[in-house]
Length: 569
Image 1 (cartoon, rainbow, N blue to C red):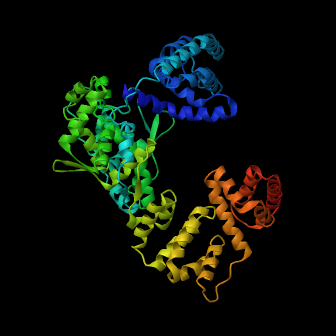
Image 2: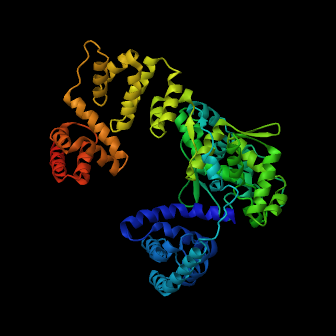
Image 3: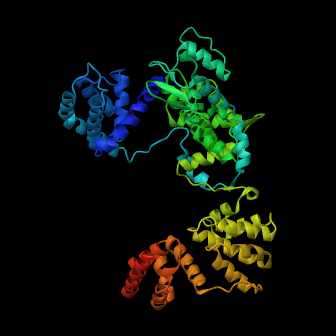
């Protein structure tokens, strides 16, 4: 069934993409996303021809099939029928409603006939869902939410530099196999309806990626799940792309893997990261397969929680017990799989994420990076930071802005110990000058560089050349009594105030109002008369905010006048 769904989805994708474009102009009130499941199940259950639609099939699709597969009954109740109506209209207007279909008018009449019953079915699903909200939901073996508290309590995880990670990603054998498969597919290979490739093509594909032909009396295509996983990985990596008329094609730059640029390499590796799910065991029985769903993620998160390494026997025992606890078929599935960890470990080794050392299984630095991203994708917080020795000044400043003061000080101290003070000052101020809108980074950098004394003078002199840093440079050079250095101007002072207001506004409205009240309405009023002239990235939004939140009506009025002047410049 999985193969059939993949084939159908591949066939449908170009048509649905074209429908989405058509709907923007012709049916803006419909939700094209709701069409995908309906069109997919129509293809799977009622017609292999994407353009053949019958009234009876439409009724069965909406009243029998969709209630079993719809993910959001609330959205479906409101938008499924209008979306399907738009899709059928699109097929008719673009000549895709095949001969032998019922007319568009008849199909639309059927939509009208089933509307009340369809909505009732969706509302029943909504009621059932609401009735189950209080019941404890259990995820699969890879549900990170079960480990959220433990993940939050982990010590800081240090991530390796991109150059090291990219070098490891270039060596991942699975990506090379996905590349070779995509190159073999070529520029426009037609895929089949029941299986993507014929048996003869499967044998060629196996040879292209270096896999043996399986010993089987049945169709070869049904005995090569590993090949189909590599096919799916090639799609994930964007090495393969569906084309028109049931074809797939290799992307132009695929043969260039491994790419020269580290960022391109890591971007590609991240695209395929969710392929970890392909490591889950696939059994002949679908229910047993589902009982072990998420096994590979469950393995990964347990490695991370253990500091990156686990005894294989202990890890297997823990996952076996977890499978039994989560699903009544878990024990049977574990036994049926023989060695359930084998395919998971094999896939993760191939993707460069784990390594086996005797009886121990370890995360590689690339694997640690990947698990941290998967945890982040699950909206679970974990304290992961770049390694101190590889952290750039900008990464340091951005990270420290989110840390408590004592932790930020510790990060700065460790980073500074690896550099001469003058070099540290140069890197920090260069980072502070990268984004003129980032006041917090500027203030942090200036604060740290200000502690370096005379060693920072050359960096401060260089910073005078940048308008966003000049106020800080002039102020600190003046404090150091550097001969020939410019004195801070009134505009410099106003710039510093705008930076501080920007940071305060970022903390929330109450913090911003409090900061304004601290300096009093008279001082704010005086500043508003001149500060609008400063070419600061946030001056207009700050003036607008003051006009909205300042409790003194005269100050708010002055802010509106200043905003008008700023916008007139």
